[in-house]
Length: 388
Image (cartoon, rainbow, N blue to C red; front, side, top):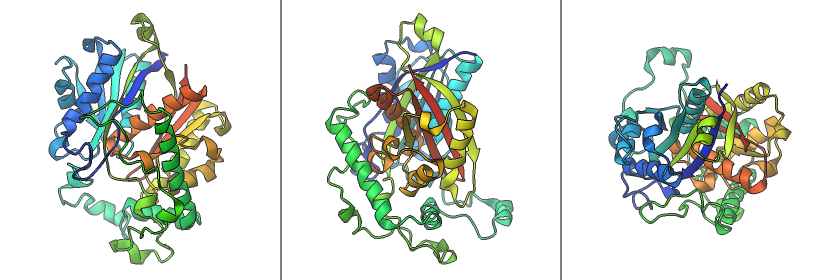
């Protein structure tokens, strides 16, 4: 089997996903194109050698419609001969893009491929791809007669089932900002961030965040239609213990190890194992638990063999419950901060987490890294990489 290696991983800094955010004036095509161009240039790669570009994007509507990955590739100046496709596995879209890319290399279908992702939530709001239409149909309603719920309500249900109180959620959230701010202050993000429109600092990180400050925020989902169905909910999820709406893009250069050697490029890590799983679409954020169990079984590794874990902080309950259920060392969990601080630009988050993970392993000398991401509809991806 061919070894699939990561030669480089980069990202934009986060921008607040609202009008006036640092990246809100940048068209999503231009945002992704800037990252793709930088990835090619900083590795001195002949772009004609790229076999495919696989991108993640969740809201494929408006400015992000019509295969944005192909449009961005052309905007970046890559040859017309390079193809591209855009995929949607909800929040894990670009993590799945990296899986498809690496699996294609291992199968011999690709020598060089780019996995990437983009989401400009300030310009293409979350859910806009539905266009206000019913996306469930009749048969799904027959299977789930009480109806599915929003991710915010899922986060509330998880908090209730695992008895996570508000202080625990806010303490974890403050930790995310503290670690992200410390990493930024030490220059830990400098080599992975590509400036866009003069923006090179994560706008969503709030260094002054405290538990006391977070405690003043009101719950965000008390008014949802499903509220009356769940009397066990104490309403703990706030904007402070959730990931913010974010603009961003990220990309990874993935290739056959022999190809990297031939081109004189240094592999930074290799893909070790992959997993993807479905889970309860009501408790849709818990898929990270079976996905982790599945990938550990496949890899032959134990959780204590992993030196760093990147578990997407869609909401604070997700990594907290994951940590409890898999017995993970809390000090290895999101050690550079997570999405609560660094943002969650949906389609770009998978390769953003991969960027963070590779850099963390290199900085600490760790060998194995685990990345896992909960996804809308009840799914999760998991990836194990090995630093080289």
